[in-house]
Image (cartoon, rainbow, N blue to C red; front, side, top):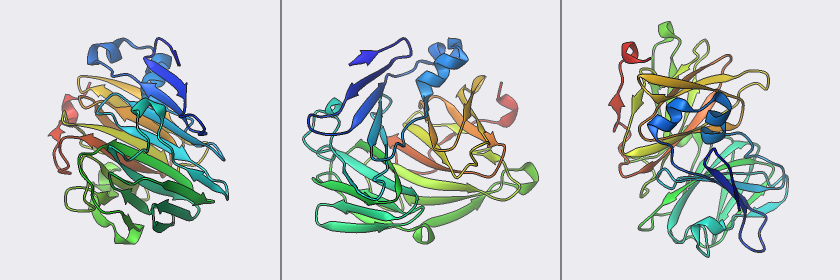
Amino acid sequence: MTSDATGATAAPGAAGSDVTTEVRLTTHPDDMDTLSPAALRARVLVDDLFVPGELKFVLSHHDRILIGGAMPAGGSLEVTAPQEIKAQHLCDRRELGVVCLAGSGTVTADDDELPMAPESIAYLGQGTRRVTLSGDAVFYLVSAPAHRRHPTVVRTRDEAEAVPVGDAGKAGARTIRKYVHQDGIASCELALGITTLEPGSVWNTMPCHTHDRRTEVYLYFDLPADERVVHLCGRPDNTRSVIVADRQAVINPPWSVHFGAGTAPYKFIWSTAGENLAYDDMDSVATAELR
């Protein structure tokens, strides 16, 4: 295992598997305030999850949220437990959400075969033993600790609860699709959904908020290769910016704001892990208070 001044560590996966895992340590607000732009990116930005034929994980010590990327590239990949969680199977003490970003494929969870199309999300409950991903899909994985088992479910984009929010006049019109949450697919700690910006809008999650009870990760996707999102994080009175490209993620500590604006249309997957599944459990921050 290796580590550096950013607080990140990396290690090979469990014996006999192709999984690699990077570990991100917790970030204190005072620490984030003093990080250089390069050190901030190393601390919060995940920029290399998706590699053809590979399964990769990043484990954050914030609420023990685990994110991953898998590209079976027409074959299949077994989702093995990273050695950092010390479990025989990934879902021995965890639950797992699998999102199809592009292409098509299948999530096999024990005896269940779940067909996946773009923006389908599969939820796999605690106790699931064998998980395999196959097809030409690009899969994004999110896992949180779990204390009891909930049923395995797959939900398509059209089946998700769609909520229009924002104001086109403020360039923030968007549609939030909720999949795993208090009133949707049942889970223990995991909440998961997709937000799509409407044509002509660029701002996401405005007005912004924090929520001390949950860590939130944003995975930006469907962003043209030459375009970027300016993601804002940090304390409301001392925000920091991170420039984000397509299929890159930002780990936002519970005390941090998390919002941004893009130079072109985009979508993002929001996922939280923590002690409250209520979607509206937020501590609002007035735009005028941001610094």
